[in-house]
Image (cartoon, rainbow, N blue to C red; front, side, top):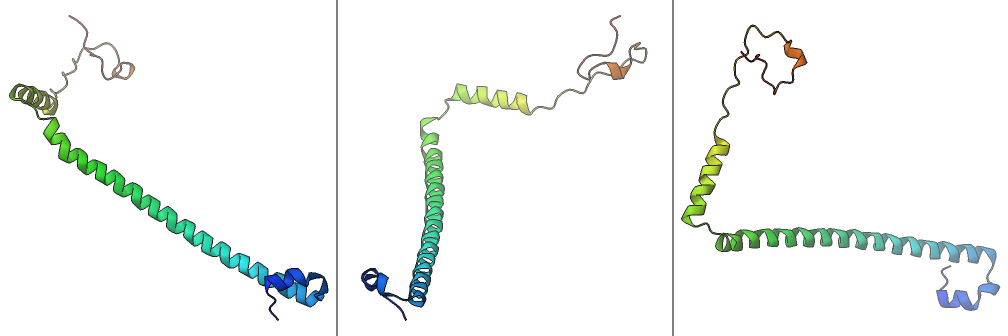
Length: 120
């Protein structure tokens, strides 16, 4: 027997123990169903907020790509300086100097960045 909440409040003192148990079981089931629906809504909200954040970031990135090219153009002199710097950075480093055969100090005691040949 299902009892409506309005009737439950009016007749709470008149219900038997079995009817009280049944009413409590129904209320607990209703609460559990509402909690499950609330959890699903919270999960959907978190997903939507993540999607909004992702699209906002992507929109800002695309705006930067579009407008940065117009506002940050290099003139000929700046471009040549940039190309020279990039070429210098991209050039291969010279090979390390050979180690002299008559070094008195063990190679293991010197840091690798130091020159290991004695000054003559």
